[in-house]
Length: 242
Image (cartoon, rainbow, N blue to C red; front, side, top):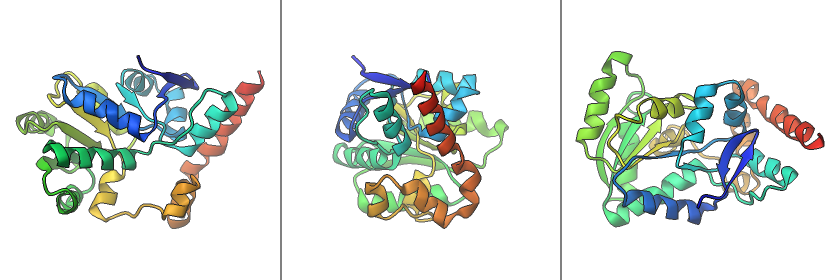
């Protein structure tokens, strides 16, 4: 039985990293597609005015709280989220699991060459992983049937989709009936981190839940997107006061 809460009517699973990985292990032994999404406050806010994105998240099999703002919101609402589970951390645990159990992965997304670099670095750390295939995210709509056929023919166990939110969530949602993998997970910029084309925040920022601030320092142009964070918290506080 899933233990979920809702933040602004968006379901979030009450899991820590170990519990999330246990769910992944269960998904891998079943012959059906399971979907994992990793929303943060920005995605929760986007879903307020995007019915397709909202439906996609509602239909997922695991929705992890990737964003310290979701933990703060849950504390204000007293709904019991205690630990952020980041997409990059869960992806790392899933890769480690695939390495131990010799499972296969397919990477979809990123700029040309990024998925290739990511695969090379993943294999350096996890040499027993089977890389079933890769495809950058710069494909045309007409190429979609070929790409889905390639993913299915690869017999990959896990498809990591790095098209950026909310495009990746909608892509998985719209192609759900066509995909023949066991897990499809939206991973955003994780592929860039594995490729080495982007760096994760230092551990102290991670520990303090300030990775968003580190990204802002490194990429000041992101400030427009970051403005959603105070709007999110204000909405939570106003809703709580009613």
